[in-house]
Length: 549
Image (cartoon, helix red, strand yellow):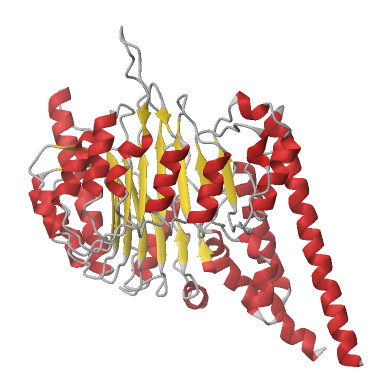
């Protein structure tokens, strides 16, 4: 009985049982039904806490470790408010534009002690669903705390600011925060005519955003990671300069101007910068101050991205991600961006995503482009580990076996090679897979725009080539010439060379050659796993028998 009691008091055991109650990595993609089920399950767990003391402490640890709503807070203070009053829905949010309900009486000392005890357990808060009622409740609790942090051990915060008079952020900010995500939505419109209303609204919103950033950066100077979405035409990023330990900065929907660029250039301590910008209408030479960057992500209009890369002089930059948001990026613009990125000597990971779906050819026939020519500036980076190119353009990209040999020779340490482009007439054959297996022993992920088989001779066993560790192989659009061969024979050839390899997709989603190929690969993979398992079991049995003898 004593051992059972100790097991029930073990937080790790209870956390394992109720781990599904806490938000997972894909929390933002949960369906409303899943959210309701999770909320109801938390309510049931709270009821268990009330009737079983052995579960109380570890179960509340689970509930308070990641606080995505204020249900535990409301349960702790059930005597201080009435959630069933008219004007509140089941989740405590306001309906019909009514004022938030006030607490029926001041919080008693036992209630406050209980709240403070459990609030110290909160490490993560997902507050995207906080309504006016929850914000008012937090504000009331912060007044009760007399200047002390409501959640003194909070490390991560996700908060949405829906108005220029947000009251939910100040009670949540604490000096222990090191990871914050802020989303600004809405705009306050004032004035007599449209132009005046728009200008005044921008000023009011600019002031509100500035105050929110000041509140955060003043109270959490040890911030290391900050994600800001919906900034728009903010005039300055000056409050961020107070966070000298900031290492990762992600800003989305930002219109760069001289002041914000100067502030950004002053953050010489940044290691990772992720900018999703709309326009650049000023001199950007000041960005040369970003000398400590190790990872850079730029999303905007492709013709402006090379300008930013040219002025940044971070000698330690290892990762670059470039993305075009206009869907009109030309071939030369992409080539210039790749050329600008190639100047960084320690580059290891490069990602490019830029489509051109709106430029139509009139009169002259469209010609294909050689993919290896666009990538040629990167061929001198022998330390490249990851290359990802995602692009669609008229005419497609030609990629031959000799091109694949050039890529494999240039990047012997490549671990992930993703060429998600639309194919032209010239496509690689099975010989390219053999070349990659010989020259790139560390390759784990491979995606090609297409693949063909010249003859049955290419399906013969390759002498002197052992099993390769490739894990994922994806072929965008196999040619009809490849589909003329037996899918089972092709699968056996692939499995012999890449025994750990799998192809994404389900057989039911395809027909013909691809469906047969996927099915045969999965069958071979299951058979290999079963054989390895039986071999390991027999080996353990023989070892045990030998030890007994």
